Amino acid sequence: MNGTPTPGREPDCTEVVLRLFEFVDNEAGPDDCRWIQAHLDECGSCLREYERDRVLKEVVRRACGCEPAPEQLRTQIMARITRVSVTRTITEH
Figure 1 (tube, rainbow, N blue to C red):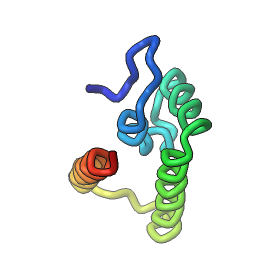
Figure 2 (cartoon, one colour):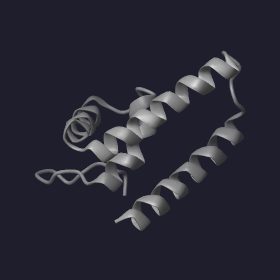
Figure 3 (cartoon, helix red, strand yellow):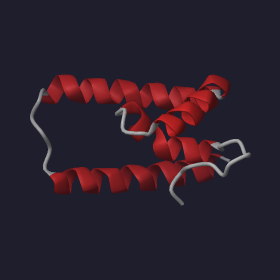
């Protein structure tokens, strides 16, 4: 699953949460940004998750400045975030 909703179907919270970091980092494509934003406009739970991710990114940016993380570290962190997000989302429903 790539996280993109099936055409003609509203995205669910799991799909949105899996794509939030791309959205926060402005790495999602224009179509993905539109459906993610539309979902956030309607879903308070996902909007709160987005706000936490956005604040976390800002805190890390302030603390780390412009020092880039090694690619291997980024890969490990993203894998763990995905695992935690999926586990938490599944257990919340």
